[in-house]
Amino acid sequence: RDDHPVACVSWGDATAYAKWLARKTGKPYRLPSEAEWEYAARGGTTTLRAWGESAADGCTYANVYDASAQAQYVLGWNVAPCDDRFPDVAPAGALRPNAFGVHDTLGNLWGWVEDCATDSYVGRPRDGRAWVWIGGCQRRIQRGGAWITPPERARSAFRGDGATEDRADYLGFRVARDLDGRAEGR
Image 1 (tube, rainbow, N blue to C red):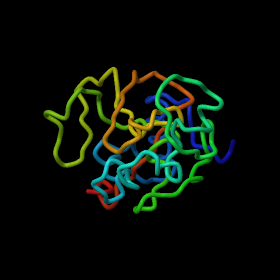
Image 2 (cartoon, one colour):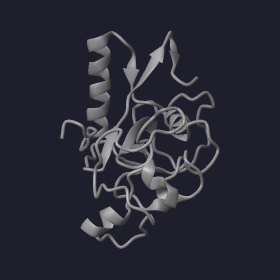
Image 3 (cartoon, rainbow, N blue to C red):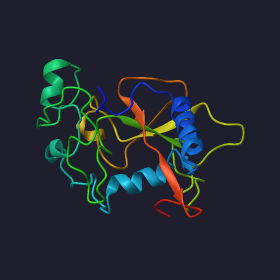
Image 4 (tube, rainbow, N blue to C red):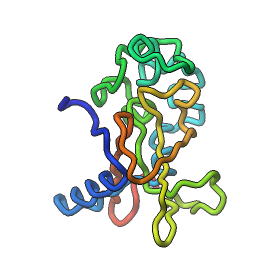
């Protein structure tokens, strides 16, 4: 639907869109770094989720695997003990934003970020830049979880990854824009 976020896109599709948007607007759009994504998702908090610690309180903020999703898709993993009314992808902005006014950072769609996938944060830049390898990488980080994500994974620090050519109905992206030569959030 027109009010749904873009889904079923690969990392290459997402970066191509950001480059197209940058050319079209003359503004420096790109995929966010993993650190930038987490900063925006946390909304100024230090809790597991922008709304607090409990996954049960999340259905007003996040579209995850809950009662409505389980009624349509029996997947055999934990279910959030609430109902957000969306069995799969929700319209963008349908749920409450975090304290920064950002919608849908947890749940709805996993989001591609710029960083190469690694098992740890060892060696990563400490200034919020993305960690990329010379010559590229085969797998990229995905953040935020999706409508199909069990509640214990719908938290600000949880990270996944995927092959750069992966596409799925639970996978999308966000864009970031540098302001006055500085990256947003830095």
